Length: 524
Image (cartoon, rainbow, N blue to C red):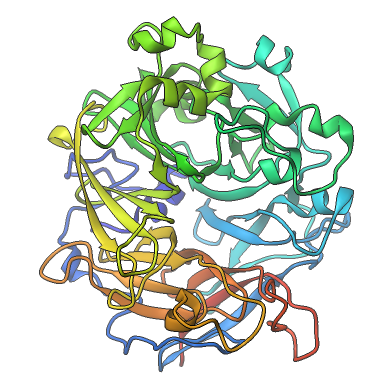
């Protein structure tokens, strides 16, 4: 059978994936090749929710939720604590009863200085399957560890490592603004550094240098180019890498695939207005037998930027794109000033391309365009992109809008994407809310209520149709909906509740709101 892309990847490093008959995607993306419509769905039939302005988790009849972790929970005996603004989450199962859970920590609206830097990055926790068949994170236990923005030492790889563009650095300090991510084909976690500009500013944005929002030590501001990369975390060895070949920009996530000739491809979005969609293609070929040595595929390859007007991928390579050669770009500079390179190469500025996911059966690539302008509707859309010959190595593609924002479509500002077992696309929203109630008339908040999670059909007569499954508390967004290893729960990050100054979820009224990880399941 085909199961969701993330679940293939989460099994990939532990030898549990069955080789595929379906050759559209690599073995680590596809298991048995039975029809998706024979798979029981965690969601099944449910009555779609209506908009809500309540300070609680809203679910259809027959479902309930449990809080697993909250900001500040002690996760290890050495004092490490679960960070703030938990976002992307993923698991890797090692055997029938044990595995790892990774959770990103993106930001904080309550902390500053070194306290802020200790609260971002990510948490890596042991998960264990209990006698009841339910998987749960274990804490506090000594195996758990944190990656933070203050003390964690991280290796640089790729063309920019040791270059003048990074002042010769081959190791950097800390990871911040950790938003989306992925599981690598070799069974490690990937975490994207997104809005690093809020922490350290950014001198390299083509529209003008950014000034940091947070007040941090001057020493860190001088090293702003050390941030804005895809970060790899190996839970078994605790080795951590920043892969410069994947570019430096506001990484939402990464979606891996292989080309028809076996090279590794990676799709990446730059969550910034007027920025770009990218695709990396490795020089070497993926070899399952090499295990974690396949990491070296991310040391040498070509990053491409999308020209959606002409349906082509532009190589960010001075040898192939004359405009970059004329501007004097070398490989290291492209890895650091990636937005400049994309602009000079003629890539299409886009409306905040965020999460990118590959359909586990068809290979279609879906992209959240969070601020896509919609006449008469609310901003946001999901782009569907099809590579020529369904080959991730192709340099030509076709694209269309799968669903656009608006009240009729019950959608605005899509942010995260994930597939269900039956290839519905789970979509979370992230639109701004006001500071007072009732909401200002005519806004997404007034018409659609609090942010929410919806399921969008990707095929058949209902392609592009949505069913709302979950409503967030006041001020919150829902992040990274992920089926548990047993497939009997939906794990979801509830990020920045109470950020608008209203609400106290998950605490009682009058308490301090805290980001948290929840598990949704059917009532017994």
